[in-house]
Length: 183
Image (cartoon, rainbow, N blue to C red; front, side, top):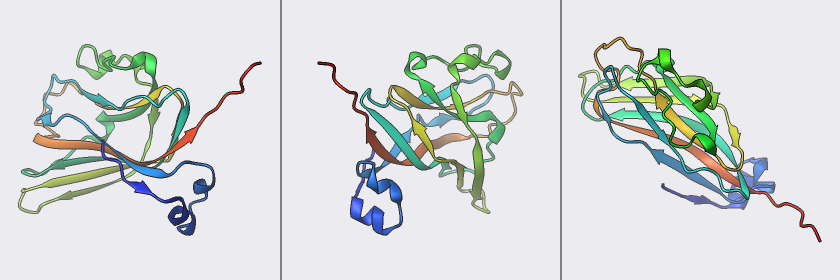
């Protein structure tokens, strides 16, 4: 995971009031496995590490990025799910049978709803770049972020071609959580 630090004064001068209560902000970049051309049947998901017991993450400007250097892309946005999930479901496959009809809804978590997207394909079919934007969110202690691309069972040509890199990025502010001690 890439981490770039941003000073608290620079965030205050930029008009970010969260600099008053959160630790220094850092860029979170979580890469998934490179896609092998997603054609039915497939299962694709990756997860971040959970937030620590003693902290909550305030995630600002989250986005999912799909990039293929060698082909145009046309992802089905209805098949892409980004969720925050309690740690009891870490590693549990969202689609145990590889089809949306068999979706294990309990392991999906709380889904983040996309608020917009931006698709850019090379006019000669040489490269494709898609960014999907989400609202800011808070990740509670011991929860993690899951990215899943669901199989619609159509066996259509791949909407995510071979060699596509997928990243989930956001500006992460770690908020420490302290509990009162009993004497």
